[in-house]
Amino acid sequence: MSELAALTEVFCGENPIVDIVAVHGLNGDSVKTWTSKTNNKFWLGDADMLPLAMKQSRILTFRYNAAVTALFGKTSADRILHHAQTLIAELVADRQINDAEHRPIIFICHSLGGIIVKRALVYSFSRTSKAVEHLHSIFVSTYGILFMGTPHNGSSLTSLASMSRRMIDALLPSKVVSTDGQLLDALKEGSETLQNITDMFIPLMKQFRIYFFWEQQKTDFGTKLDYVVEISSAAPILDSIERAGLPYDHSNMCKFASRSAGGYTIVVAALMRYSRDAPKTISRRWDNAAVMFMSARKNEAAELCG
Image 1: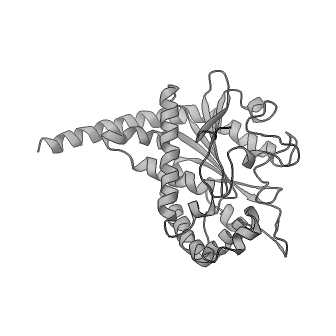
Image 2: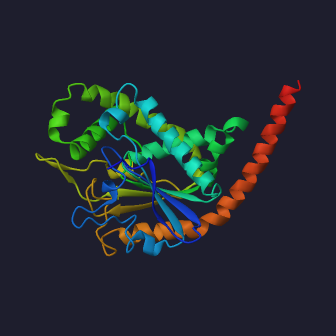
Image 3: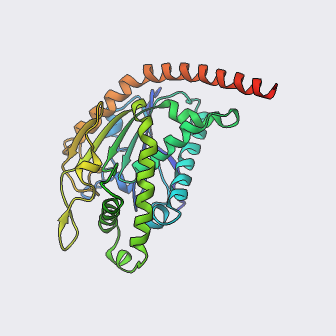
């Protein structure tokens, strides 16, 4: 069986008005991350789940190498950037082929998938020269982001490294963690990267509708119970940002077994609300972007003419 493409369509309604893009986290998978362990319900794509509520949407999943070595270590900044660049390139190509470059985007991110999306939007925002202005389109078209258990800050790099270690303990086999003697050093380097990405993303936040979700159940680490990402990091209190807890541990907070599962209604209602409001806002944003690009091209021409 061949591997899934990086970007996979799991549902497409008739005349979709919004693209919903799901990005998994550490040691995740583009299907398993969003699939209930109790009944194998894939809530993003199964006909009686999200597609039933979002009939005028197109739902996609993004797949990337989410191994620890791909997100932590001395080259973590480069690796995260590479995943982010690929996400932007895949989305741009897909939307060009489907004649949907101006369609609004809503991201759903679990855990460190939110870091990939943040970095992707920072990258997209910076692509404004004529040769790569098509890459700027994802920033312009993004309307909303649902962050599920994404670490947004820490009181120090040490606390971020500790959080990252809990995340790895929760999501990887213990033998992998215990046999990696360089893991703590890698976590320290990676934690600095996470904080830097958050710092770059903060000035852009006002452009998006954002919903922070935190885990309400502790993860069983064998010797103790603890939260993987504390509420203060997963859902900092900020103006104009919605917040809600989900009644699951870190791994299961993005898995819904049925429409009556705890938290499902909150998540779907947010997606419905964002998809309703997005078209008008994104249309206006594209009008503004057209003016910006026209001005930029005139300035470039003037510089060439001396």
